[in-house]
Length: 252
Ligand code: NAP
Image 1 (cartoon, rainbow, N blue to C red):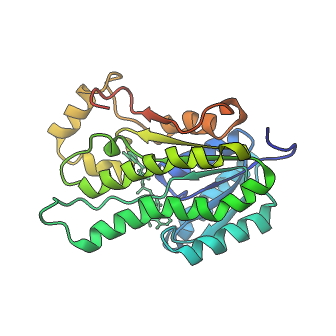
Image 2: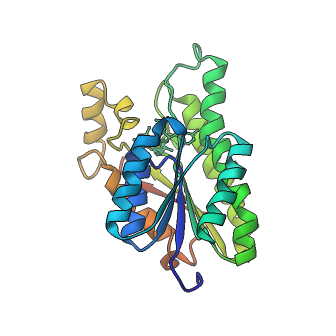
């Protein structure tokens, strides 16, 4: 169990979309928040901080590119200084730059792997000494159903999310004895700026819906409950797992 007192969660990429919804959901569950994004999202991140304060919880904003090891180390140490404790981390920051394998510029491969896969590793690595010292941690990594089957023009994105799942399974084995759990969430098609990349063609959008048991697209709020569960003590005996949050997409 976490120590008594208000728990704190760090959410990366928290200015909009799924990250914003997760941050607000954790605040409603009683967490204080450390909100991360990149500096260009300052205004939107400040808005999320205000929304969390309106719920009655504390929020600190810290800017860092999660693919930059030095910036991540500085962010984590500021987060611990500012809050005294990080109980849970949600590695949500991610990017998608569509492109076929044949035409994909190497820099797009690198950028997607750097943010989605390396960024998750860097944030976890920076936080582990703190979590180990407290004997407690909840690590929730946002992968994707794209990491299981994927879609054309997203091979590098699929590879990055498969990497997040493999990383999480091994991480869980390394840190379990210290009271730290590590799990993945695989969202399906969620209506956000990124999710709309999969919905530009109405025929493709309709196919996603008809292949989904619940016959609808996901909203950012649909991801919140499963993340809150994995960030809480209710999931104390759950680790190394990957949970699809996709409305029952037949291929997942
Ligand atoms: P989104 O609307 O594009 O939001 C992602 C946020 O992450 C943005 O604020 C973005 O800032 C930020 N970010 C990007 N690179 C960053 C970096 N290097 N360091 C810190 N923050 C960074 O995406 P979303 O749809 O909410 O997706 C959130 C997560 O869910 C991602 O990991 C995504 O892969 C995953 N996911 C999404 C879907 C979906 O259908 N939406 C499905 C499966 C999985 P900028 O906008 O300034 O780059």
